[in-house]
Length: 569
Image 1 (cartoon, rainbow, N blue to C red):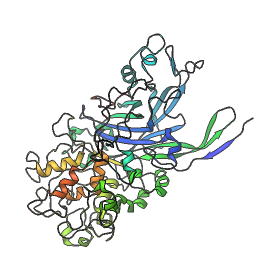
Image 2: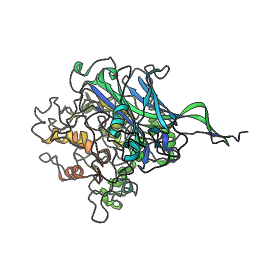
Image 3: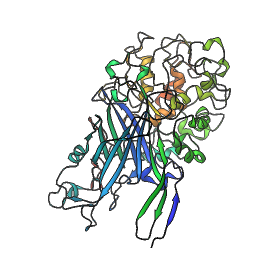
Image 4: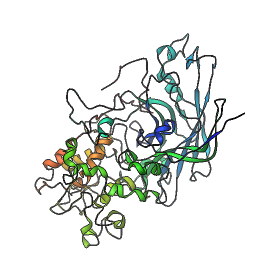
């Protein structure tokens, strides 16, 4: 006889435990999404969706693993003429106990909770799916040397061999990996959520701390030929230039559960009813540091399609974090952000603090003709009213991508007029008006050993395009600048997205396109204030271990038995 308890699953939220409901369901918690040009193969894109935050390597005897009653999905948008996904990858997982007589996870060459997966692909918005990987292998947890390497009582292999065996080739040509890895994200969580009490400099007794140091996650990684992602099936060699707008994709990931969960007195759990999205993630830190707590669960239950994200636009056009970079608000109460201050009189008149007009005084004027801000282009979105100053920079970064149109070109070559044509450095414009990680696949990868490679991504590309003679001439011609492939044009594993987003909130993008900080002069646009912003870091600036040079690029998971052999912090 069953004792039944039915639970209706509501809208959860995603990332590292940043919303109320998802903290109760870590197996469905989407922690990070990455999309970047594969550094060892210019013809492919790597897309990574990570789940299950704060996996301790010592988490025995029931080690962390993908859920069996969850649909994990990676969503790709490459057209503006369709209303939903253009490509969807769906992953579902199964488990087997090879030796149920033992309490050990691995014993005598057998593995309990041995996990396999099925990967399906849809090209019609999720209406139909085709299986492209069946019975894919998931490596076990990296328990310890006796469990993994011992020939008598363990698996008699190396962990790296298990990882290599788990890399599958789909019937449609993608490489696929699912399994535990070191969490590649790095951030001072304790400082960030003590009301922005970052520790960029630190001290002997309280240095910056990577809150994810030596934690693992479970990763779904795809290495996909550009021709499978490009809307017309073209390879990267067919791009017209390195900012070809036909090569822009939007990427986001999700997890879904069935609506009703049933518990019974034999220890079994059943699931039934419709599938409900309980987690989503596109741009990093959106739900974590932009959406207010009362809206987080609602945000995560929606998709970025059909304008559903527009209700959250005010949190980007007047971001809360900006209040702590404004001395007329709470700036003095958060000294760790003193290096970050928003323009109050850029070019002598433009104020971008919350609730101020920003560029709105130019709305409808002839000065905007030929720019993305004109009413004939996107002025209704980018200049909606006289109290939404960051609709001109933060909103497109998160909701549309940034076009290669004035004013969104570097100040190089503009002659002091931010609305003039400048040096191109970004075009990941996909105006679907929703939160996605947008990537222009035509942009070459910056080699990881390049002397100009930087974890500051597109911010550093802007600096080079403004100041470095090797990259700022000819001044308005399109030319590859190192780190043009960095966040927010996609997201590389190395990118310090926390620092980049804080710099962006403080107005660094506005400065890059010619709306310089208040202390700038015509002869010194790279002013002390801009240098202060560029010198700011949010604490940790790199991952706690190195990345691999080959797919899946993420490092093998930390092993609970060892501590610490490869940590940086």
